[in-house]
Image (cartoon, rainbow, N blue to C red):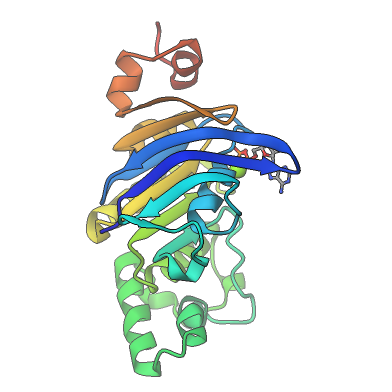
Amino acid sequence: MSHIDINALIKNYGGLEVIHGINAHIEEGEFAVLVGPSGCGKSTLLRMIAGLEEITGGEISIGGRVVNDLLPKERNIAMVFQNYALYPHMTVAENMGFSLRLKKVSKDEIARAVNRAADILGLGELLERTPGQLSGGQRQRVAMGRAIVRDPAVFLFDEPLSNLDAKLRVKMRAEIKTLHQKLKTTIVYVTHDQIEAMTMADKIIVLEGGHISQVGSPLELYDHPANRFVATFIGSPS
Ligand code: ADP
Ligand code: MG
């Protein structure tokens, strides 16, 4: 069970409210894209789901369980960032297995999890390389591998492709979609790129200045934008 419920969620930074009482539901196995302009609160919301940012008010549940007071590692989630910060002195295999090593998982089990992730991502040939010997796309794949080995119920992505060139971005979009089809996990994917949102999402959540302005499928938002902001952002003619 890994549906996500967000109820009356508020975030203050030093007395300044940046998330203004958000309600949202993300179904188990859904690919939800959180989209909106820079500064609208996407990362803040994602980091609250991850447990990396304290919740000022309201509630987040994952799989029906309130997680407000749970540590990140207790939430059965994995997060992939835009600057994927691989350990430069470790091999690809070591990078992917590191979080399991911290959890004192046995060597055999780590090897199994790393090989499974490498299979899913086509990294089998690269396991003994270091990050410096990889292309940008390969490094991004290793960052996803690190998340996959932990076998989380929920993946959180924060603009994972924004450091890649346009051509590679298109390719990685397809790879992440394939990954979702294989793993069938719940995904919350943050982007400010409307094309990414339109091509990847089951459900788009449009965030505007700390409010949700619309939730719907790409087609629904395109055909029936709730307001001019959504229409302009999604690029539909009305
Ligand atoms: P986005 O990811 O959509 O670009 P953020 O969630 O990073 O937006 O930021 C939302 C708002 O919260 C912005 O106004 C930003 O300046 C502010 N903010 C984000 N992080 C902090 C922080 N650690 N301290 C104070 N303000 C912050
Ligand atoms: Mg952000």
